[in-house]
Image 1 (tube, rainbow, N blue to C red):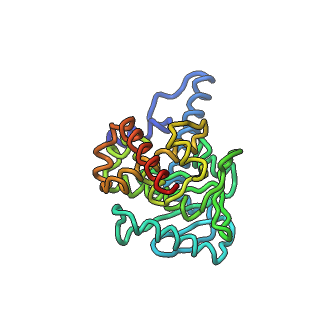
Image 2: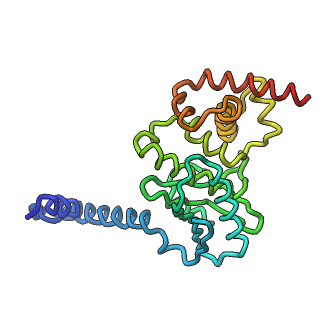
Length: 263
């Protein structure tokens, strides 16, 4: 018998010596059940469409939902596609899939840890959004503060993670520090959940804020400085990935200069 088939059968509790005690039989059944559940979960990650009965497509983005989608869903997809078109990483003809969960338990199924607005999976590049209001173009996360932002921006942000993986490869993109990986996606959509009016003075003055939303805001300004202030490309930004303290310091000085010019 093929050795790979034997290994697969053993994972499911087959092709092994018959258990001799009741405890061994119980453990064998538990192993099989866990293996089957894992296989079903992997299948769900690959083909989540089975849980989402409705969909609309526009400009290479298909949005899936458990409830009927309003006309505004198409407009949200169009806005997201417009944001992505400005990226040098954009790939013509690429198709994206976005699944709007609109349920804490369903989103937790696809994202067991954390409370983000959405998550993008490697390999499939499927995007899962926690909750959305298509008519208002608003995405929400299950957290007490800084918990709303534009739905089109969230979709474009998560799709950009897939574009980064496509450009750099899975392993290299995985090694990117958050300030580049998240910062570029935030910069592309030109927004953050942390208020601009509060964040810019804080960063320019070198102050901090405990919220993770402010950290993402800082990442965005660092990438903005490199791309707008220095005119660098995405590849150039990646080349400075290991230079976070210097870039942050330079970005703060640049923002202070920008603020002085506006006053």
